[in-house]
Image (cartoon, rainbow, N blue to C red; front, side):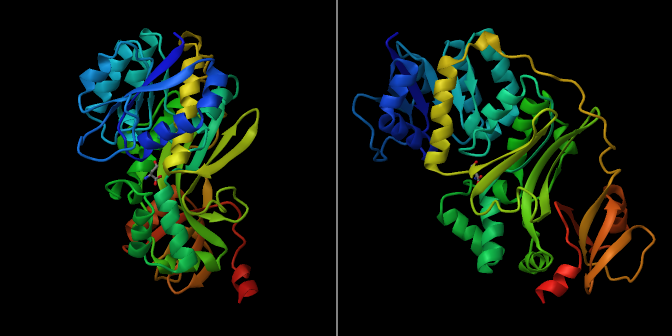
Length: 407
Ligand code: HSE
């Protein structure tokens, strides 16, 4: 084989970005792979649409045409839906092609099946573009997992939500105005509910969980909260306390218990996620040998995602699929059970002067408090007091004196 033949499924932002990058970086690809990369075919939905595709590429609406190509080394999937995409990728693997996907929802649902099937057919699976756009988090975790034991992965995994929270704070926009700006910039999913209600970040968290811990939690047990309840007033109050709202996916292991959450969190300015703004994503990995690593970069967009896909192309062509390294599945170092250690919380809507559930450490303004409490105690407080809303604070909380200092 002197040429690597690739098929692309879908010609939206990701598919087109990948196609254009193969052309713009043909020399680099040839140098690293020792072979020319050629796009043999592209699967599209609508034949009438104008596209800038070379005439020697087969453009088809039939997946069977792609399977019937005489040579098909890699299938790159950049379609949004999970069905029938999964079936397409199964067929590609069974035909003996490596696969690369950017489809987080599909991979969260069927990734394990595809990885197992690929193993039996001695081909590789690239899925870097499913999580955090252009950030090489999958490769980093693969690399770390050879010997390190990962204890926690915490990240801003949805560019749209981060963009909205940043715009609301910096430009004093309402949630609706900021969402419209995200849509105009092309960051949001076709249905932005997936972004703002945390489904997109949830799927990405499940993919990371499988990779980092070789398991994922029961999906129903994951606390998933979006950003739709974050008002301009809350953002303003947080700002006065030196805190910023970030939508954070967190995957950690307490002894044998895997705990995953996707929720708005208040972040202090010492924390590595505090300065991650706009459409940027970031992932903070804690592991036992190296300590903490934070990766930050563009979480969405044509070329950041194309960068992840093109690097996957090199990965699948060079990887020896039968030589996957040892992956530690040991328990992480024992620590208190989730919910059993004290954290700082911002509480709003609490009208009483005292309570017998938790210790309030700062009174900010009418109904707004900072407390130091266990998560279970916060849940109890909100059960007893309708209208109470609370958010965890991570990183340094400077305390009430910051209000005086900034006044
Ligand atoms: N809608 C997604 C986001 C695109 O905003 O992060 C990249 O997965």
